[in-house]
Length: 101
Image 1 (cartoon, one colour):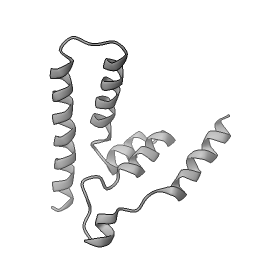
Image 2 (image 1 turned 135 degrees about the vertical axis):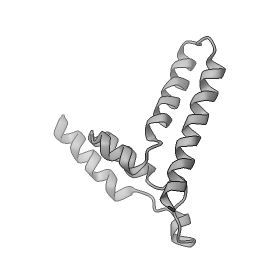
Image 3 (image 1 turned 90 degrees about the vertical axis):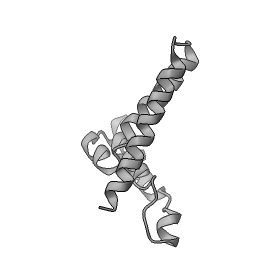
Image 4 (image 1 turned 90 degrees about the horizontal axis):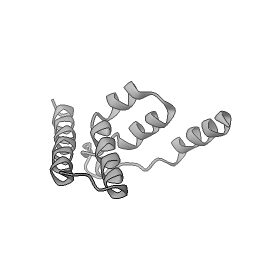
């Protein structure tokens, strides 16, 4: 079973989408690195995933919370969702700005 999963994961590298912003304008977009970071997570390389795209963990936390909230409503979910969204956007923008320094 592990071998089959490994073959599938390794096959995903051949189907990654190129960044159109980088191809047309020549600069990275705020989402550059997200696909590779997700692939690193699937492979179990957590540090490499963070190094590639630091916003992956707040983004996963946000999506996990939204899914959990859909299954069973949580008290103060609006405040928690807004906080997670702001932190995710903050990570994305900070990472994007630091790329240019």
